[in-house]
Image (cartoon, rainbow, N blue to C red; front, side, top):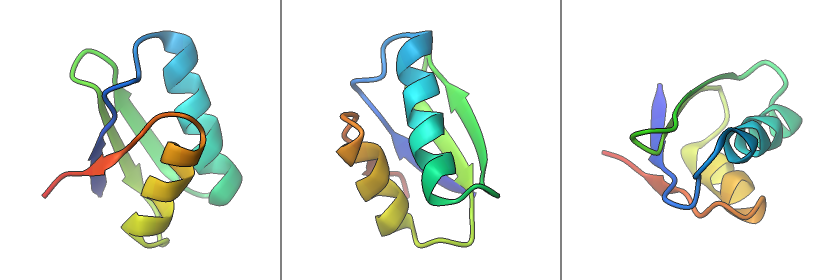
Length: 66
């Protein structure tokens, strides 16, 4: 599981956009979002850097945790 902090994620629409961006890159990814903590957890075979870039390119700068 890869975890990111996404500070600009503020509402349900934001979290839906983040999930859509990840799924567009990897349709088989599992995405879990905790909007209150601004956390996105992704289970994917893709590298964390690719996932972070995709989320960031969608307008939500992602910082890899750990």
